[in-house]
Image 1 (tube, rainbow, N blue to C red):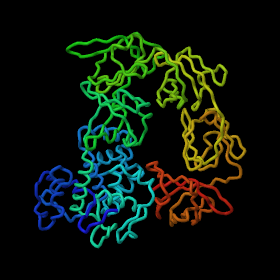
Image 2: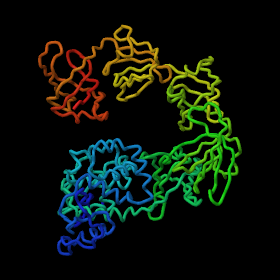
Image 3: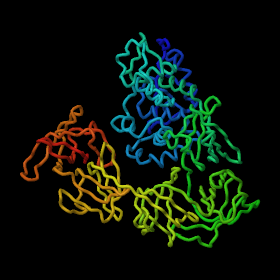
Length: 615
């Protein structure tokens, strides 16, 4: 541990981001920040203001003593990490596709794109949004120990830090630092991003001012100072761990992915085996060296499949190709041809190997990724292709399709030839007998299934019904071992409740149930013997999270009298906010809430399996 000095106020957080605030981003000086009043922060404030990171108010002041909030701090961190760089815009766009509904839930007054960017960069997670941007927390003044946590996340150091043993701290007030924050405080101190206050104290619970924020932001900027490049993945060599990324005008970025390279897909850390040709890529360099690569699915208008007919070049149109396009519901190859223009950076592969357009033979099966009307990826294969995988979903409408996950991880939807040959467990069957979860060997012609060999397996699961979905393809969500899993249910499934033959409509949320599976599809449902399923609806009057207890006031449906009962919430109970359909912790339940609790009576005590927060 480096020796702490008395001077630095290292902290992080955002500047004046009020919606009503008009900002003066490039003011060289502020009248309320001078060599006399803030000598330790002057350079940092002016530098951050010049770069448009932390800004002033419309009256020209900086207001250095004003505290900064949790939401403001996230916005500032995103600016330091490059949210406003044109080359990182793809991360923001992709993050909105993945996390847009989660962000919209919080109805933010500002900072939506910045939060999306941090999710896309894995700086924060969806589970942490409530803590940082919920209306009850986002305006809270940030504390110094919280700054240490955010700085560590911004430095991509959290995962490694969690695996380390506890680190000793030399601050005089170490005992005041929350236990879960001590590793973070040690890290930012070692990195000289934060230092002690007077009397060798860290002052973990002190709030952070705008002047202090500017100092830490300046340090973080100097530590990161990223450069970015973008392109489309054109080749991946899993053996050598080399990837090639095609920029515009045929420029190729070639890099080896080392153990130190941070590799993410839509914010999730992935390995070399998870990278696919055609992904959009944002490459980040730190001090001129490869630091991280963020991959996203290509921002596409359409994916077009068909048979390759030929190509042409012209001065006016550039490179074009003609394809016999297979329509969404075509089970045979049509004769009509369509012409497409290739982008300058188009990635071309044949049987998964990068190649030149001239290598694609007429009659080959092609899949085109089209962005803004231009082909950015052309993937060609032999006319016929055989692969193995697993049926992920059986799609009945508007036409019958199988959604199959190949053993390599790629998932796609397939139509079936009208004369398709299907066997299941060694017997010739109708394609309608193929179920989700079946292991399959598939032969396709131009991407249309011509033969399929399926194998099933039998199993059983016991748990609590969390959701019953009644539709043309009925589904059942079962909670067991603390995990929610959704299964398809056959229309002729055998359903027995307490020994009585029943229907799918008789199933209720909260019932203890055993399901029998053929592959991943439910073929039989039985209620667990001896369990009396009970549902109470009422108002929470008391919560004790430590003991897993809530007290509920409700009207007895039989007597009409008001009752107050204790409800014990199991450790693996499912707690759901009905409005958002988000899973919550028991600590989210507070007195005054309206809830539905479902569970069983055990030796006179009510044990809840499901708690639904109504409002």
